[in-house]
Amino acid sequence: MADLRVRIGALELKNPVISASGTFGYGLEFADMMDIKKMGAFCTKGLSLKPRAGNQMPRICETPCGMINSIGLENVGIDAFEAEKLPKIRQTGATVIANFFGDTEADYVEAARRLAAMEGVHALEMNVSCPNVDKGGIEFGGDPAFLEKLTGAVKKVCDKKPLIVKLSPNVADIRPFALAVENGGGDAISAINTLKGMGIDVKTRRPKIKRVFGGLSGPAIKPVALKMVYECVKTVKIPVIGIGGIASLDDALEFLIAGASAVQVGTMNFVEPAICQRLAEELNAYCDRENIARVTDLIGTLQTD
Image 1 (cartoon, helix red, strand yellow):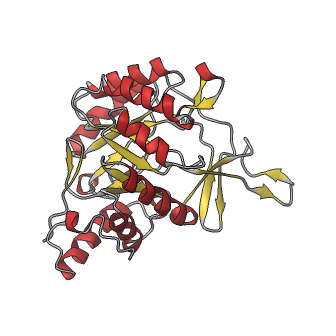
Image 2 (cartoon, rainbow, N blue to C red):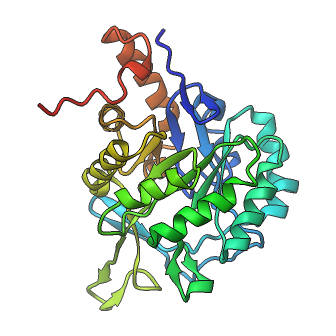
């Protein structure tokens, strides 16, 4: 049996397969369909200081090779997460990465401080794709200088728990943003979030999403994600977690060979709820078959000559 352990900052994962935020609820929704402690970790829905109802319906539509969503970061809020969700999550034995966001820098810092103090939360993932109220709606992750400042402020309250920063692909060049996270003291990068997209119902001639635009995810974005993950890996020394259209073991292997220390599976959780467990098992079998003793021996082995 191969050694599948990887490290994300101070956190050791039993294997590099993680479910992505927004596609796995609070983990409990999947506990009857798979053994959630057998995946490396799962990311919670994005959490905010106060509960959010999310956007009006319709807010999800399918495309030929993915989906578009505009959920609007619906969540129960950090108080209800701590009181109602986390005690049940702890009973599963799963490794938990709490995804969080805010409307202001102060919101981000306070949310991180609260989550970092919770037993059963093993790492934090900061979503910086939200509009910045203080800066007139500019995304927090759309300005490298501000992203570095925000990362530094949040990292100060994370105690010893790793801070992962999830980057948006909706920028001209992702490398300055990866560098901003590293310079700000972030422990890891996860990339990428969804790409902006839209769909139109040709019968009604109306947008398929109430808010017109949404985030495109699924197999359609994998080549874009793979390129951006590779660029991040070549830019920073901290671990990079690859996200984007992973639907098979080969997809996951591509990200690992490109240099990702772990991968997150998103849209495919809706198609096959136990896919993360299956991919971890298939990765183990692959390593045995290829005589790879440690999965870390596979990471970053891309040959470009």
